Length: 330
Image (cartoon, rainbow, N blue to C red; front, top):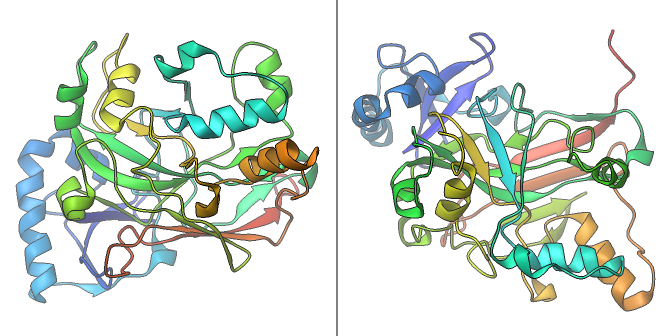
């Protein structure tokens, strides 16, 4: 099943069921007005939403209309929780090595995770507003899970069963601001502006064999300014599974329905697969050539992030954004 949120309808938008081929959508006001409302009682509403999904795919859903990615907000325009991890330690190791640092052994056992801003997410086709190119504008292609209620201390098996929906992510990063923030010892803030998620979120069964129960075993494709930048495989070189990351997030707190947990930058040891962020290719350049050669994003640059099934069809729709200069409020 595929679900999305129209921008219209207030800050939490309007829930729509979207056809498998991303061609049609239909609102479901008699079931739930928003995705968060559906998640709050998922076990009740999921079967009803699936019934609409079947009708929509059969061409029998009343009120169906053409699906328009430009009309979509994030599946959750705002969320109670957004926790992002770094499950692909090849990325961490490369970035640290490029600046002469080693990766602590503890990183192999204890996931890195930060708490991101969740009061506003960028729509999947919205511009990325940034005040200065000097901030070091970067994209990060990731996968993420939206969960049902999870009790504090839940283990990976419980967390796996609590995954309601899956998405892809552009976790926008401002690399020039991050070092000074991390040096304070209190984590990211300004270096992590609003995140963008895919036009639709899908239930795990929608992925077929590509859903392993732990991750999505497919490449995630990043296209920067019309040229493919990378297609690392999300099922390869993942040191911590999505259920393990969710369990880590729930270690000292319960997670409420609608919480989002991300994988961090998808990264493969095989560099021929390309990269999911600019920071990583700069790290490789610094290691191999003594200094980075690739510049970060400029105003007017575009980034497209997408995941395709075995037949080449888009699963989540595309995150398709342009970096623009932000000149301040009104």
